[in-house]
Amino acid sequence: MAGIYLHIPFCRQQCHYCDFYRVVSHGDNSLFIDALKKEMIIRKDYLAGSNVSTVYFGGGTPSLLKAEETASILDHIRNLFRVDSEAEITLEVNPDDVSHKYMKDLHRAGVNRISIGIQSFRDEDLKLMNRRHTADQGREALDIIRKSGFDNVSADLIYGIPGMGTENWAANIDEILSFDIRHLSAYHLSIEPGTVFFRMKEKGQISEVDEDESTAEFNLLLDKTGKAGFINYEISNFGKPGYFSIHNTNYWKQVPYLGLGPSAHSYNGYSRQWNISDVKNYIRSVNAGKPLFEKEELDIRTKFNEYVMTSLRTMWGIDLLYVERIFEKEGYDYVVNLSGKFIDYGLMRQDNNNLFLTSQGMMISDNIISEFIMPSP
Ligand SMILES: C[S@@+](CC[C@H](N)C(=O)[O-])C[C@H]1O[C@@H](n2cnc3c(N)ncnc32)[C@H](O)[C@@H]1O
Ligand code: SF4
Image (cartoon, rainbow, N blue to C red; front, top):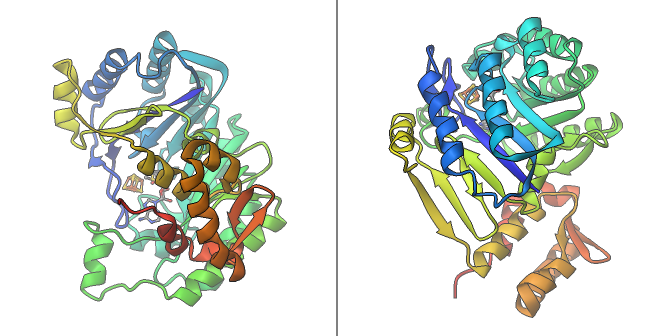
């Protein structure tokens, strides 16, 4: 089993919070698409013949691709890899790219899961974040997507937005749940170096919400999604039964994946590598037959740290039998000894051979997880 991730690095404009690799583009994507297809040919053996069970078009803005461009990329993938007939094929869309015809064409091309970036239903928030769309465009897009034949629909929201406040966040959750979506990704705003928000924060034009507000908003999220039948299977991800993101779940379960396009990461069980974050050099290097990337071989300590960091964020938690098998007595004792105090504080719990964060623990997950990182000797 394996996944394929395609990074489509173009956006019409840059959102003030975003630090994903992307460039502003209004034009022709054909040189990029040619390079993406060439990279697939060059790297077709990376997955060592494994069946591909998920394909994910992320970005950037994959909905800037024409439906026929997406279709031709998918055809190319199917020609080069063994793609399961039931594979989950996700494409991220921005609301202002959605039309009935476009969504129908994507569906026909084989896309069977849509992830739409709604972020908020308040125009003030969208303006502050420099989103391209209005709240009404978000509402309309959600309706169109469902009416175009897509059943597996996910939406992204952001909370902890300066000036939004807990009541408006509650209204945003209620409204997104009133649409017939199957999955919700809700992220706390993080203000990253290099973004416009970071500069605004430095100038005192915005400030991060305080811890009480963050906690209250996370609690609202857990409560309202739980009552609506969603399962919080990862800190920021909520799915109806049978609708968890298979692609993302596989990342957290150490399933290999091939990442194509600038800045995309790949993992094969032994090493991680990431493509150059520069679209021009990406295209040039692929056309020269040598895609530029950096690589890290994973030693046992790094594998342990990655496992603990990702599994603690999920509802499956740390599997102690797996830890004992792969990381032996040293890893097992380390986890069990460290978890004791968190269990005493009510921040973690143990259920048979699995260790999880409690909802209280999830609120300070970054602090707890950082304590589990095994330092180098
Ligand atoms: C990289 S975006 C791609 C999706 C698409 N381009 C869009 O904007 O809707 C994936 C999601 O990550 C979330 N995101 C990105 N940067 C974030 C940040 N700094 N804080 C919180 N959420 C963020 C947003 O919810 C966004 O929809
Ligand atoms: S959030 Fe999405 S649309 Fe906005 S800049 Fe980032 S990738 Fe582009």
